[in-house]
Length: 223
Image (cartoon, rainbow, N blue to C red; front, side, top):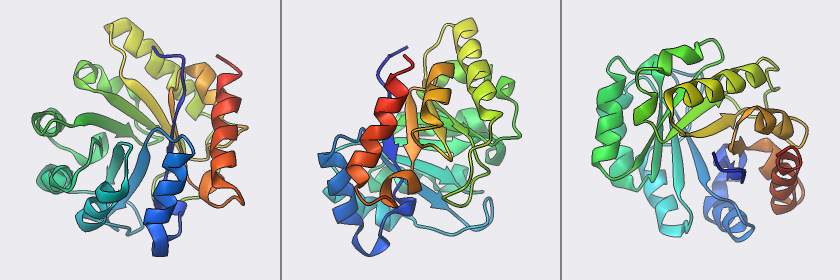
């Protein structure tokens, strides 16, 4: 497992009137991914963006688009986001009846496949598919809104995921999303997370680049 912690600022907390500028700011500042939260108002109680925005972001981003589908119909629509230019696509295990098929669809398009787990979903349910995954996303809040407080139990969930990966002899990127800041970043990094999603802790700060780098530096101190 890489000892470098990657940072994926979530544009959910950025200024939607100028997303291009927000993306340029974080990529010039050293971000590793642009995290794009897609919500449908059904799987989660919020409605955000769709494929046209992903396509527009692809035109301005020089770093990978990490598209997180918090939607009920990912199996039917994942192709829209792949066609729009998503480099990484993460779907929710809770929303996919045929999870392996969706992962295959993502891979067949040449993109990286991830699966996300809500706080109440056991990590163990990924055992039979984890060898097919490029990334596992542990939600450390209940998905749907930015600015929520970190759920402390998430640290143990990351630790259990890291143990599962070791048992199966695989090394997907372990990502954590929700309430990540310089205080919580080292907690999940020490447990095995190597990619941190942060929204309000980056874009709601006076200097987003400095805030982003402070999160990464805090995580690196425990490695």
